[in-house]
Length: 117
Image (cartoon, rainbow, N blue to C red; front, side, top):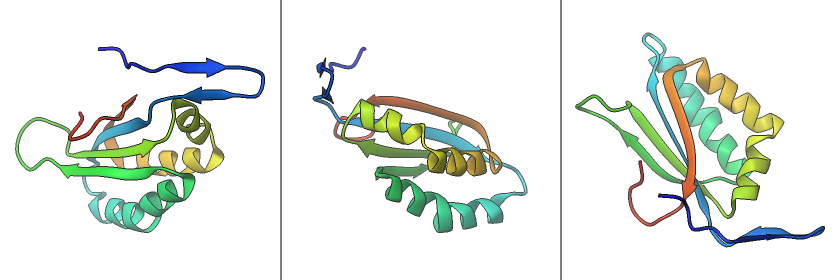
């Protein structure tokens, strides 16, 4: 289902009526658990919050064939999400995360109440 966003553009305004959620999933790389947890707690979470993301979900899969970790973070608009995800600080945090995880996936969706995957 496509998001129901309405936006308008002008030379000075680019606004959309919907908040968005960045949904990221991954598996922690074998033998990197300690490094992973230290990075996530000390750098990744504080860093994404400084950038403007509001963390909304953090899930760990205990049983089954789903990604080990799911993290959701919301932003007020698609344009703000794009701006942040193009920043040098996001690139630094994202690159460090990718060194510690496998099977990384991300998607940007319309934020809705409740669990989203």
